[in-house]
Every structure is written in structure tokens, then in C-alpha cells.
Image (tube, rainbow, N blue to C red; front, side, top):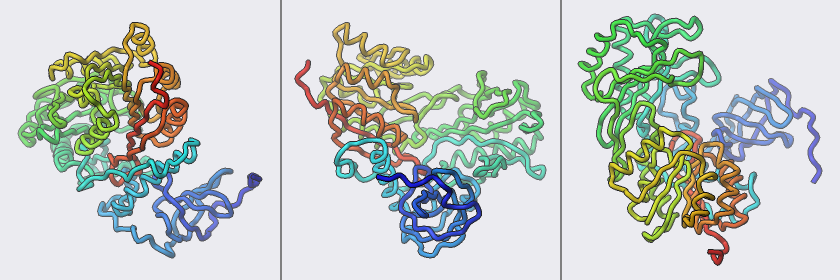
Length: 465
């Protein structure tokens, strides 16, 4: 096929009609003008729009909607008043039914682009959504600033460094919205200095709030530029007086010029250092920096899908790679003979061991280090897994791990992914020895462009013991 020439087809500032074919991985509309791909935020599949080119590169152009000539039947009014400014959600203007459809399509596109697998469409199931896709986030991390002498907290606006004050985020649990609002008032009332990034002066940088959905316990973390907080005793007293639901009040110090939220030093100011949360019948202790799924209601559905894909009989030996604090492994532990998990982060392994011990799971072993180091060692010692579960970061599985899986050849691989592109590339690798049974998209973050997947893979040739 002749490749189109790379001369510019579109000029910056040019206005032209465009038919939107699909949604891209960031939730933007995708269309083609003179065979050049054009990305248009806010446009929906099957819409006919008039677009102004805002950024033109060799391989693509970006544009903004000037006018919608033909609207999608799935277009809705975004309920959030600051939706256009904030950028935290990308799809509030698309009906929830339309979102679930588009997320499945994003998965199909990724496999089309990054793999040569056959029959992907018939193997990809409908996206599992939420009954009520609002108020699902159990944690907020809002930067603090001052606007017209008023303390504000929120997120930086889309493609800007302007802080947008968020009073009532519709995807946050009501409790996190309430406590953040009240903390802003307390900081204002006590005149506690707010950190100014440009001048690098002031104290309070970020308010992190987290709620245990099942327990109702709330944790507040104040990220400060210095350890000393003026009027600290008074601040603690006011928070305890006005917010009795806060069971854990923590300070974290981050004086660095960085986009990272947390620094290295953490102190408990009042109450406990942790809050409790429950998933199903498993309880977890959450410290200020512990990672935990942001949507606990959908996490139960996600982990149940992992359990279904693993097809457990009670006699399996399982490896939980990238195990973190052991959440997935503990979810499966009742139905397996033995579980071994590993992670490169030492603190996660300490937590995983404690969680397993707290639940009386003596058949769970957790070690620090990568799976590609431990699995060949265990096989040499005569211990071979029947099932391996991987839940890697957005970058996908380490190449050495994929090679190790292909050498060790467990009967089943269950791949949990938060990035369809790296998932498709990794499944392509594994398809040398594994048959793809099905792909199950799960909507963990309604109104955003993110989609999680659980892929069930079975070894093609099971005669090599």
C-alpha cells in the first residue's frame, strides 16, 4: 500500500468540516481530514463538526470544536459546572451507556493496532459498568492555593497552571468533598500560610482525604513544605472539633520542587496512623501512603472477574506477580492450595505479609523482588505454579517476566490491565504459547477515558508437565 506523503494537509487556524469516527484513548474524538488524523476533545463518534486546527504535526493535527452540525444521540449535558475547566473527567458529555460502548471500542482499537490476534471482537465482552456511576472515588488529592485572599483547593486546569477550586466533585464520595471543604475553612480561619509554588514560601501544599466506604472512617493528610506548622495545636483541635469523622490525621512533609505529591517523612498528628476498609469479607489497614483501589465498589467486581478467569478448583498453586499489598492474592486465597506473591517494593511486601497473617492465610508467601527472578528459582526447586496473575503498572509487564512466563508455562495466565495498548502488546507476546479465551473490560473510572481489563489466557499445549 502506498504511504501518503507527509506534507502538511492542515494549516494551524484552518477551519474545516470533520466526521468523528471513534473515541481515542484520551477520550477525544478522532476523525480524518484529507487522510490526516485529527484529534478533537469533546467531539463524539458519528458527530459532524466544524473544527479549527489548534496544533499541527506531521502525523496528526489537534482541533477545537467551532460548531456541531450533527449531534450524537448519546451527547448529554455534563452535570459538573466546572467540567470544561477541570480536566479530571473527559466523558461527562457522553451518556453512560455510550461510555461503556466506547470503552470496549478503545480496547478493540488497541488490539487492532498492537496485535495480530484473530477474532478479537467476538472475544471482547461488553464493559461491566456501575449501577450508579457517581460518587465512587474514595480519595482526593487537591492542591491548595490562594485566590483573592481566599483559600482554594482543587486541580490544575486542562493544559494550564491555573488552580481550579473544586467545591463539590460529582465523582468523589460526599465525605471527601465535605472534609476538604471544611479543612479549607479551618486553614482560612486560622490564617495558616498556604504554599506558593512560584515564591516557594508558605506551608500547606496539598489536602489528601480518603474514606473507608464500608467503615465510614476518614483520613486526612496535610502535605506541608516544612515540618513546623504555625498554630499546629489549634489546627488539630479545630479539625477534631469540626470533623469528628476524621479518625486519622496525618502530616507528610515535602519541601522539594516536584510534581510528586508525597515526601519521605510522615507523622501522625491525631487519632490513628491508619483507617480500616473492607472489600467483601477481607479487611485492610490503609496508611497515608498505601496504594488502594480508588473505586472499592467496582474493585469487588474486578476481583470477582479475576477469580472467574482463574477457574479455581482448590488445588491450584498461584503466583501473584506485582502483588502490592496482596489484595488480589487474598481475594483468591480461600480457593487455592498455595499462593506466592512478589513485588519490588519492600513496604508492600511487609503489608502483604501482615494482611495474610491477619486473615489466617498460612498458605500465602510474599517475597521482595521481581517475578522473573523468583519463578525460575522456584521451578528449579520443584515448585511450579498452575496459575499466574499479573496486574502490572501502565507500562505493562517487564519483558523478562513475559519470557519467564513463556518458559515456565503455567496452565493459566490472568492478565489485569489498566492500559489497553500495553495489554495488547503483552498478550501478543504471550499468544506464542497461550490461547486468548476472552477479554473482559471493567469500568473502574466512569466519566474518564480509563478502562481496566481482565484477560483469561490458557496454555495451548498442556502435555508438557
